[in-house]
Image (cartoon, rainbow, N blue to C red; front, side):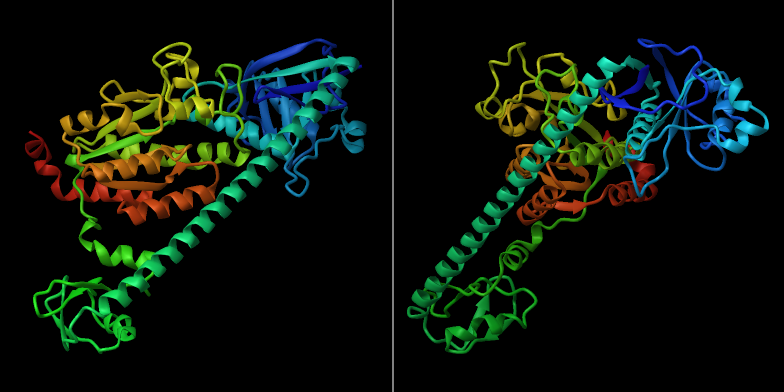
Length: 501
């Protein structure tokens, strides 16, 4: 008696073996082969991609015909094994033993001609397999699978380990969710306290300032050429500001005393941001002075636990890795494709975490405290193949949170003529907000591609985007940014090379 398992994501997963076929299967046998998806997917017809399926493990989907027909079509194409993906979304963990069906078994005995093994995987596990195959296709590489046939004693041990691992992962996810919820509550409490302190300070400023300002009926606003009449009572000041397109946060008395009174005690933080510095909300930019800065899109952060990374960041949730693979990476690919097909000279700069030494003794205190260590030249330092740099791209390693403070990226960007920075990538330990704030303080125009950024949770991404927008960053999407590039190319493409020189 033996039990079949498939190795997915470095873990063994039980997959029931069909009652038919598998004549040569025995305990301890491993079937390894490159995986290919059947065309058509349900394999109810002879495979259109029979040439590609020869000598490989074929993945088919349940439906349209009986299981015997599917396996026969794969066997005729030269497959060495068949994996049937259950299509039952209502019960995503369901996987059962496939039979030939009484009618088919009694009619032609086709099941007796099947020699290769056929196993079934659940809908949830099939989704992982299809995602692996999709990633392999995008990376232009083949995806290998192993079907193991274990004895009863070994299988029982493996099943026990799978159960223990599942419970541990579930506990880690609960702890991560609770930690993120606590951090969100702490941030909300901090923001609420900050707003209360600001309102209290502004109220004191209004009270103290009102007693020292002469009751002049006209006031000159600092950001408007229009004069406005204000009532003697300070309580009417906020209402007077509502009718002006550019209300002032300070006003001056007409006797040249230059004493100021704050009048924004009733203005929210978001309103204050838009009223104070409207000229910094620059929506215009030029590809000739634009540079992409792609942060931490490397194996260490983007891949779940694996044996090639030293202390990989595997404590994050499945949602994070799914977000990286299905949302962030495709969006970065879109932006890179738009920039690299544009002749306007958009620079591409990568920043990765990589130690200069094997033991990482030169790391910053923040990275040591967080347990982040990527050995020099190791697997964890490699940038994901889908968005790998080209020979003329710049890659800047670091061992800290703040890219600008610990590397020469500012020197590099200015030598490249970059004044507009577009940020994308993975932001753990607030890497991207820190980079954005420092870049703004050094005079760069900063744009965040919100759907090309991944963090511990979607809520953390939203908080990060709102924070950066308040600082003065422009927020856009990958599709909108690519469209802007194309619009610039259409309008100014003829003179781009002359301007660049």
